[in-house]
Amino acid sequence: MRRVIDHVGPCDLKSDRDRFWMLVRSIISQQISTAAARTVRDRVVALVEARSGSRRVTSASLLTLSVDQLRTAGVSQRKAEYMLDLAAKVDQGEVQLATIGRLSNESVIGKLILVRGIGRWTAEMFLMFSLGRLDVFPVDDLGVRNAMLRLYDMDPSASHSDFRSIAELWQPYASIASWYCWRSLETESPTD
Image 1 (cartoon, rainbow, N blue to C red):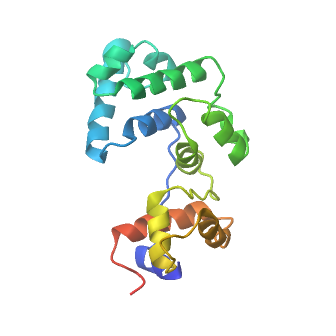
Image 2: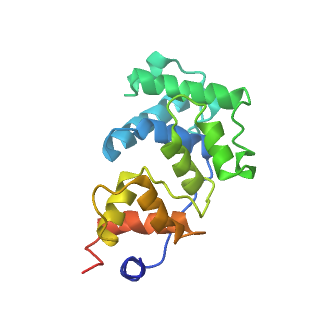
């Protein structure tokens, strides 16, 4: 990991303080390219703006839209349902994003996975990139695992416990180490 850090440079892991929009973007981005997700997000913002006069996507502004209206922005039926489920749970106070940061990592995950379309991985990304939690290890993230396989010369059939054993060495900064794993995939091999 030291070679990766030396090669990549200082960590610039940033937090997104708009918690609701971060979760909506995560739902939109599932299983589509970055460019396609950006286009759909822009269209959703345009729909909200046309309806409310504001470009800020909130639970209340999203709830003014129907599944069919969201579909005109390129959102799939299922993702539109997920987005509206999130908006309803936030609006009704089932998921309290303003105070969710006071909870433990596992409690945050437990609250978020109650929303259709949000699983553990999305909740972990929320912990890292919205709440700024420094000790999150997203064991199911393919990029992190691929980087670890390469950096630690691991067997491709390594188990979750094998990855977690290495990640224990990263505590209490597993989020930062994960960030370096992602960056290592974008640069030439620091292991050479």
